[in-house]
Image (tube, rainbow, N blue to C red; front, side, top):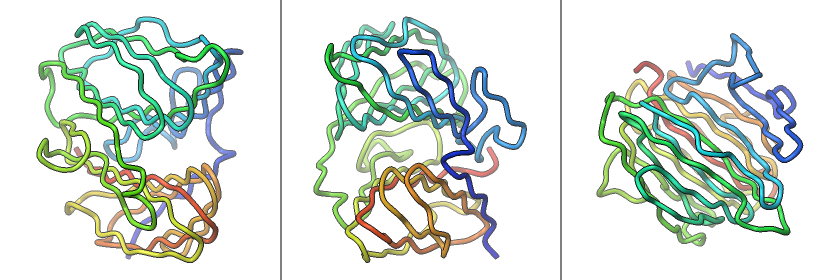
Length: 238
């Protein structure tokens, strides 16, 4: 029988730095909850809003796969691999920190907020050469269907990382449903609702709620209202 864990939006950690509002699905920085350390290889899912012109100064990472998904506004990125980029809604960015990188992230806009998801995945290889990947997605490819935006395979749709993980985005009209088959034996899925109401395996979720599900091959997803959601398919043991 499928195992599940429900994370309601209002149970997440919250950091208010004035210029940054961060809602944290798992323990991070000043938020510590021993029951919320990770979901399998998924270590961090931060739901961040950054004030105009503000951002995260240069800071280090190593041995982590870092994915940024902009939801609103423009996010400026600079790193020690000499990458300079601005990512916006419809883009996805992935970095393999590997042996170590420095990067900074700022709100490129001086008049409006930027909102983005910052996601960290434990890698299946340590001390790899750092790398950067960024693509623009076709938003129509998630309308009433699942759009793959990340995988372990450089030849598949979306960006790729050093882990047996798959990400999908869906933007469903009310009443649309589908069945999701977990990509690899031993994986589970963390379903995170971006907007609207989504019914996952019979559990009704609202905006920013999440349901982790594992020990099953597949599950159903139905939009209770017009809705948008993210599926994070990751190894439960790694």
